Image 1 (cartoon, rainbow, N blue to C red):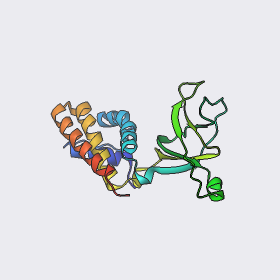
Image 2 (cartoon, helix red, strand yellow; image 1 turned 135 degrees about the vertical axis):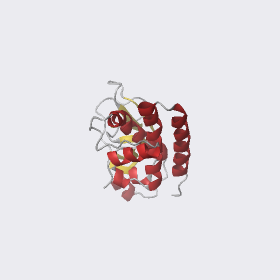
Image 3 (cartoon, rainbow, N blue to C red; image 1 turned 45 degrees about the vertical axis):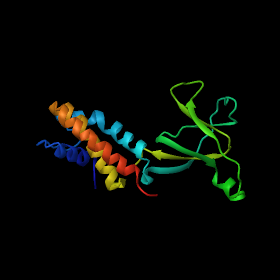
Image 4 (cartoon, rainbow, N blue to C red; image 1 turned 120 degrees about the vertical axis):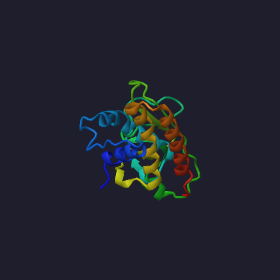
Length: 187
C-alpha cells in the first residue's frame, strides 16, 4: 500500500537525498517541508491532468440562495472537487429522454452571499456534476501521475531542504514534461 511518505521518499531519492521520512508528521526537516507542499502539489497535478481514476459523477445539491440571471439553477460546488468538468441532467432525466438535443450551459462562480464558497450555475435542474476529485488515494494513481507528482514534489523539496536552485529547476522541467505525457493519454 503506497502512502504519502512513500511518495515523498521517492522525491527525496530522486534528488539524491540520504534522508527518508516515516510520515509527514515525523518532525524531520524533510517531513515539515513535505507537509506544506504535498497536498497542493497533488491537487495541482490532478487538476491539470484530469486523470480518469479521479473522475466522479455525483448528484449536486441545489443552492438555497437566489440564483442570478440568466441562470435558472444553482448548485453547491462539491467539497472534494478540484476541477469541475461538466453539468448534466440527472440519470432519471437522461433515462426519460436519452436523445434530448438541448445543450447544458454552466459556469462556476463565487456565491453571491459568501464570496468564499464556489457555486455552479446552470441551465438544467436536478443536475449531476462530473468533476475531478481530490478524494483519491496514492494507490489509485497510475504510473504517469505518480511520476509527475514525485517530480513536482522534488523541485520545491530541493529548494526547501538543500537550497539547490539549479537542481530544483532541472526537476521542475522534468515534472512539466511528465505532466504533459500524462495529459496526452488516450481515452
